[in-house]
Image 1 (cartoon, rainbow, N blue to C red):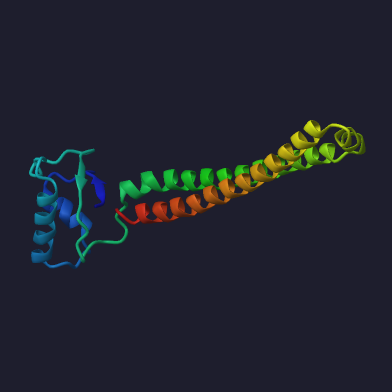
Image 2: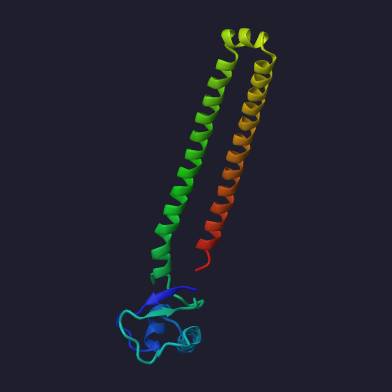
Amino acid sequence: MPIIVVDQETTVAALAARLVKTRTSKAAKEKAAQAIREANPGLDLDRLRPGMIVLVPRPPEAREDVPDVVTEALAPLLDQIRTELDALIRTANSALEADTAEREATAEILDAEAVQAAAQNDPLLQYNLERVRQTLADDGQSAVESTESLINGTEQWYTDLDDLSTLW
């Protein structure tokens, strides 16, 4: 539900008149005032003061040019969250690339001629090299799956942010 900050209005009727279109019927203005009263049971709406924050249900007759302070405050925050999610995805992809490059460099060392020659004469070394190769392969697969999971999660977060932005 949108909120509004009282400017110069001193009564709920004056506030309702500010929020509805100019040529709105008196009955519609009264209905808007009653809706404001119902949405703000703890406020003395007959004695409004500048700076008071009032919940305002949107009547069909609402003016389009009345700013919504919630949207004004939260829109930059939601934009910043989206920017940070974009950065998270970029960082995750960069980390995966660096991790993959490191595993490839390690695999090249394990496949070096000198290491292979030493492993031919040492069954334990040969076994350990195979285990390390398997671990590198497993870690590579896990890294890809983790990154994909993170990216899929951020897609849901984007959807949740879009849903959140429509609540007010």
